[in-house]
Length: 95
Image (cartoon, rainbow, N blue to C red):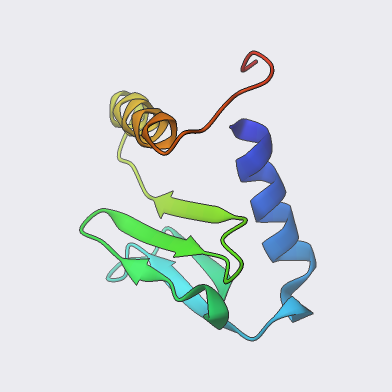
């Protein structure tokens, strides 16, 4: 999962010209981070973050700002549950 998040971050950072993009602020009121997401991904705001999926449904990103390590562990656990519920298969152990 770390590699997927890193890859998504690098692609969005290094190749912003791939598609017109909007800037998303996390959190919106006092941003800790800003990210450019292609408009075609139609980013959706939730109570806790931003969800965006590529128009071809090949890539999905979810961005959330957490307060501390304990909250991060909880968010990672919930994210993995969601991924496995979608049928995600991991062909090698997470390192």
